[in-house]
Length: 183
Image (cartoon, rainbow, N blue to C red; front, side):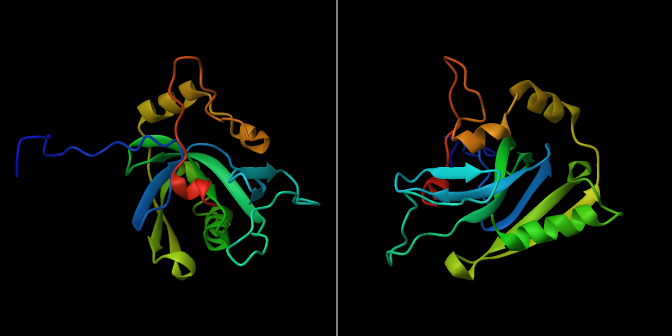
């Protein structure tokens, strides 16, 4: 052990997007979700729509030369406890969507802005499994809510391929993790 870095130092996560990592991913939902459909194009960029696509020009091909899948997505703002950051979480996994919808529809749970959620990720590739668990209802730190409100994140910009963080001149734009860029 050295004194090169403080003992509790963690490398900051500068991404504006929460990527589910192996193990527990605990967060608090801060906004309502936007929903829609998306595919990745040949330029490795997401194309999103509020309604199902009638055509998918320029859709990315998988290694077998077949078109990749169009996926139903949810996107919403969260406070990620692991990185201590306000981020956007996009969910395309139907198992997670179904679990969260069941929690929201349950009268004892309801609005996920009133409790934390933990999504546990295990495995890799097609062997990846997710479980979703609500945590006991609790208050959120008011400073997190104030920080979120001050950011003016526009999730609707995702439909246009624009930056939802509304970067002003001189500010640093949050980066998208490589896994988002790889579809």
